Image 1 (cartoon, rainbow, N blue to C red):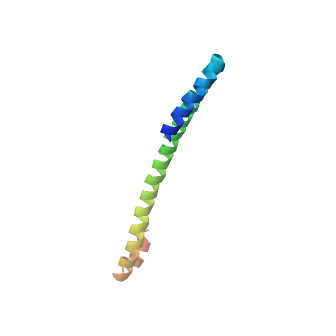
Image 2: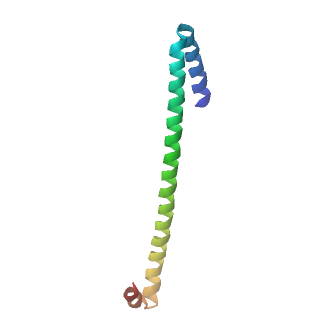
Image 3: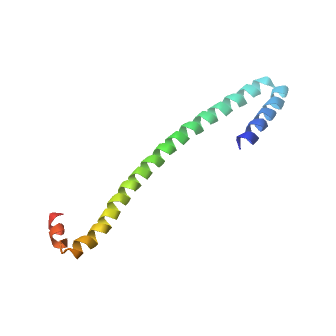
Length: 86
């Protein structure tokens, strides 16, 4: 994607520069602003994704433990005692 995007940007900026140099500076500034904003958004989204995955792993840990303990407690007749503790 980058291999296709950068040559296209440079090619179009070159022709805009040939027409009017002032407009070219605005386009370059716009490209930089868009790049910075998308970079910040991606960093924020990766942090949110990491938090979600961490919380999901913790939830799965407790769910699996709970589902495994229920049959064990029932088989060993400890289930009423464990319910009283909880």
